[in-house]
Amino acid sequence: MAESRGTSRLIVPSGRNEFDPGRREAATPATAGSRSAARSTRFKDYPMYKDALMSGSALPPGTLCLTFDDGPGETTGPGPGPRTLELAQYLNAEGVRATFFCVGKYASDLPEVLPEVEALGHLIANHSYDHPNLVEYAAEGGDVASQIARTDGLIRNWIDAPIVYVRPPYGAWDAIVAEALNASLTTALSHLGPIGWEIDGGDWACWRDGLTPNMCMARYLTAIDAQKRGIVLLHDCTADQEIVKQGNRTLETVQLLVPELKRRDYRFVRLDDVPGLDPIPHSSIRLALRGYNGLYVSPQGGGGGPILVNGPGVGPWEPLVVEDLYVGKVGLRATSGHYISPQGGGGGDVLADGPAVGPWEPLDLISLGSRKVAFRTTTGDYLVTDPAAGGPLKASGSWLSIAPESVFTYEFVP
Image 1 (cartoon, rainbow, N blue to C red):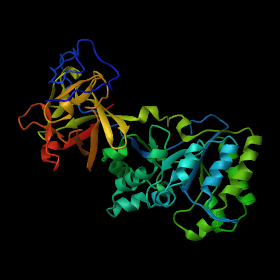
Image 2 (image 1 turned 135 degrees about the vertical axis):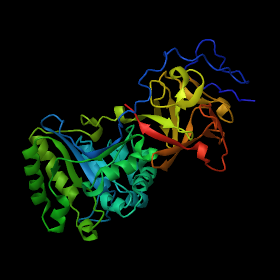
Image 3 (image 1 turned 90 degrees about the vertical axis):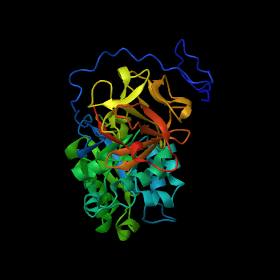
Image 4 (image 1 turned 90 degrees about the horizontal axis):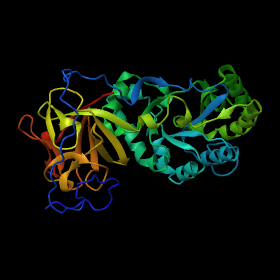
């Protein structure tokens, strides 16, 4: 017997007994009309990772976004060296909110730093796990998605924005890297990249070449005044040259730079305040799912009742919005606004009748690469395609293994 949903619902439509412990009847399908003649048309992809670096060129004149790469890093005692937390504290005292692109291996070594950086009002972002050149890494067969996913696991709890911004090491990026990340729903959902920059004074080269913080500050002032606006690249640590890391003096440089920029009437914003990089439009993904039988998952009438895996193409009924509920859990929302709801949490029927996310609707997202994915219900059952062509979507796959009928291929839709 199906369990009741409990009382966590936000909306209970009139006529529905939310506490009926038995099987609920399927809701009447929404009156969305018949499928259009354009039903089989494939939509253009709208991926979260673009083919080229994204910039801050749309910032108003006199507006800067300070970003720091390669940390976190800490140094004991006086002298040069990475000082991520001191830098974050100084910026906070100056009323400057910055963005820190973190390297996973360093976040793993210094787990106590990121919570404090986040608490100071700064944005945490993803700069890969090992800091490889992702273009070369992919060409050699490296798992690009793991570079982002592993770092996510270390930083997600300390990100106070609805998405994870991603900057590739060295700005190295191409369409192959973009597709590798878009092909894993785990690294595509609630992510945006690649994030580039307009302004770079080469602080890392300052420390390599023995320049003073005053000299380095002057280089940044020249670069900033030439552009007047944009994303500024600095390094609170160094991920690939230990001798440069030990000589890092970015804290001192910033302590000289920020007061001078304020005297010149520059304003500062975090990355999530940059026009065009607003997190809200990128916090969910709209896609279509193709089942084991080669047909698309199709909430009948666009949602409100039964779901068949019978769509020959992507029409008005097939688009689904994937909502990032919390780490590893997603909700699927039909065009009618109803959620995909394994009845009783799983083990049988699946309807598109959930008015909100309750105990039945959260699904474990399991990315399989190559734009393939599986969804596990709260009971441990998988969403599966009925073997019969055009049959209903079910939640009955064994929790012991991911069978072929539990695998869906996705494509982004507008």
